[in-house]
Amino acid sequence: MSKKKVLKSKKTESPKVVSNNNNFLLLLFFAVFVALVAAFLEFRTKQVNQEIPMNTSNVKIDSKSTAKEKLRESIKRCGDFPEEVPPPSPGGFSQVDGPVWSQDCMHIAWSLWEGGISWEGSVDEDKASPLPSPAPKKITNNEGVFVFTKVTKNIQRVYVPQRKADGSISYGILNEWLDNDAIAYTVNEEGTFAYNLTTKKTE
Image 1 (tube, rainbow, N blue to C red):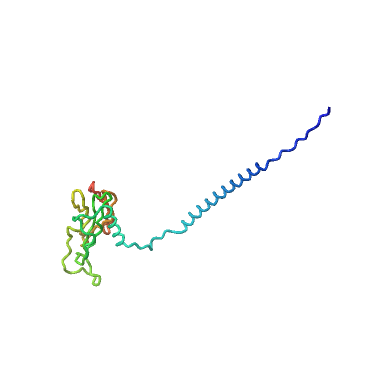
Image 2: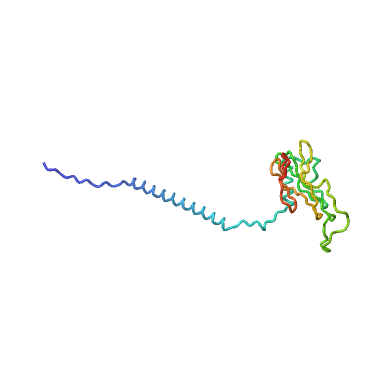
């Protein structure tokens, strides 16, 4: 009996397997494409932000509007100011910064200085010479930087205006509360200082 050689036919992939492979390749290509697009957009956004400088030199801030907003926010958060605290704007030649509640509503800070033409050492711009009488202005007890404590109802003057050798006055202007126990204020031509209510020290 002769042996018959049986030729084995090559196996061909079924349509289902080919379809699955194609779907996988498409998904892989799509994922890579999305990742590339996302990376490009992120790079482009950073590039644009670097090309456009933040120019705030021409932005004008209305200091009066800002002060009123701070005043309203402070009263809304902590309530009205007690009668021991001066009104926000006395008018005339006086300047008041504040009053402003501290973050914990336990203290109120403000500053006051009184202007006018009677400062000792002031100069007439037309004649470039010291102004004559009225007499040189005296520093009053109302001028300086103050803090009112709600519990004790005590008012502390944390900065007293100083008269310089040339007759001018170094007055303080309240800036802001740094935290519940510290305020920042500026003294003209001398810089900004911080006063701590707990340690009673100025830095």
